[in-house]
Length: 636
Image (cartoon, rainbow, N blue to C red; front, side, top):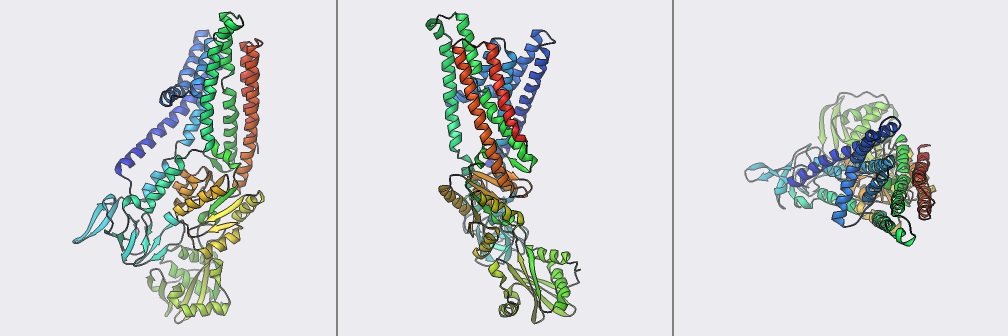
């Protein structure tokens, strides 16, 4: 995979610009609120020019960003928007002497906009994380030796040398050498895969053990890693139907209010015989009471309260829209490794030929594994440590890449590795003798051989979290369908799915296949969530209605997701769904109440029952009530 220097520069520059903008808008909103409080205090202590000047400063500081945004969008889209209406309502309020009411309108709207900008304008960060994994240089094999070249200049048919500890710069096929390849960046699976001549390898994966020569089979822009980036971009650019509805409603609402105010400025004078002063006065009241302050407060305080509630309980929501969608989730897709499972294999069984030799066998196996960086090696060493078995000095250790380890201890030759390494027939006979078949349970079996005889075996498995089992059961109790997507083989996937209680599993999934399965799931269920922790989950997380990442997951997964479980507790998904339902219920109460109050105030104004002070009390009172109702979400 390769991204051009121009794209990298523009992306990083854009991120820096957005970072500054996020903080400046939020700071302006907070400063505006402080000025409103300061001026309100000054009304009873200072002369009008002083506190009016402070209110005016609150108008300018808090309203500048929204006024600029409203005017710019109006000119660009040729559609009126709520930003413009709020500014006009605030100015109208101030024009008839109600500076505080106008300033409060500015503050509430600017704060909600600043928080939305701060939490939502991070969609490009995962691309920067992806780029950090992608080499920009490759060691090209030439007729005269080796030559460093830019990845973007590689052509199909070129041969490149990849040394141990380096990431592959391009997709290709191994033509010389053999090594274990860590493909967790692509498949999400923890265990490296041993690959030799004619084995297919991918850009962004890690060469673990030995130098290999790779024949390039795809151009830089066509690699699997590059496709992941394109899929994330495409999935995030799609706007949900609810967002399109809000945009249409916004324009219609503003047009309706402005049209009503325009008519109110002159029609009652000719139709009802009102004086011009009374007509203008009623028009200004209409502009104040019809402003969507209560409607805005119906959603934002409730949403922020719910988000705060989640944060207290280890759940990070990146926006209210994602929290809202959780109430409608009918299916949840899980990644396996690191999500349902612990992400690291651990020894589940240790069987020896002679129980008297158990401690010696474990000591020798752990000592051999000290010379390997394979995840299974760590599991055996941890197992020995848990059983308080000390390692011993092994001589002449040889690492047979992809197969196992060989060494000498106390004059005996010891082999530790897969069945092919110690002898397939002897391994089968040992398992048959002890009546075990761990492979059917999705476990990896490692044999220990002393001289010419197998003396022990280890069975290791990436175990399912107990919390995962409870979480899946809680979701199914609510009638939510569960699916597991994994890059692992079918036998292992089946064993894990059955243990976790998952309804359906799909094995051997690459990132594009996970994305495809999510899209298929969305055809069967109206709202779908995806839970993952790896780079390979990023496209699926972005495509799902709600993407949920584990807190210990990769930066890409964390940035792509909509919800982050900070404590890796999958039971929090059910808690989030319950919180979402509470929030949606309170928001509906607030919206209905706000619309009824606004309607009542507008009708009272037309009937000349309503004076401006009562209009402000009704308008601001309804705002306070819906805010207090929303704050109930802070309670557990």
